[in-house]
Image (cartoon, rainbow, N blue to C red; front, side, top):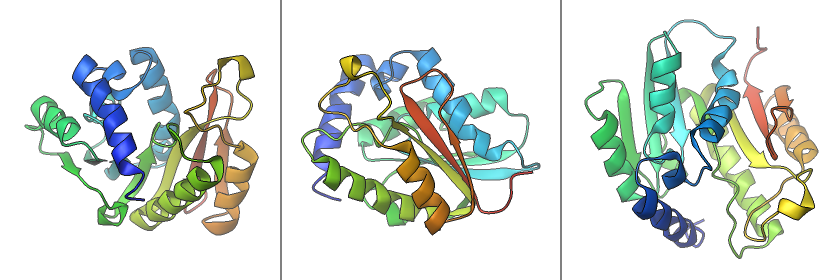
Length: 213
């Protein structure tokens, strides 16, 4: 995975230098697009109650923490992980005084703490010059780590092969939602939900370790 990271870091470093702690700085079109995705990946916690812990892989400057803090009235502890030191420093400036906010730079996903939930939004889209075969293998490796780090479940999103071809970019990865649904269901848990109906060119997978009540 280390040979992937320089390309990812370079791409997002350019974004954050140009746009700072904003949705565009994390390579989202705007705040509406960013938060719409947050709403989907956070469905992983909808069926539970009480306090929870959550890890955010590829957290950027920690925008998800701000979103949860605004929308959720339950106690939670947030652990954000990112490759870029610049993103981590921005996150500390924004939310560092919050006792339930934790953010750190990692280059090994195995370093993630075990929490109730792990989420990843947007980290599987930019593949740059890597082949689809190689990128798919990389995603599966990361999913293994997310599963290991999650006590109750995890969620992630990826651009879909059902996206309009006219709008596709050559440097992005478009995945088969049927494959990832089947893979997660067979390897990790029988309790998997595929969401592909929220008006974006992508899908979200929600994986629960126990039935979602």
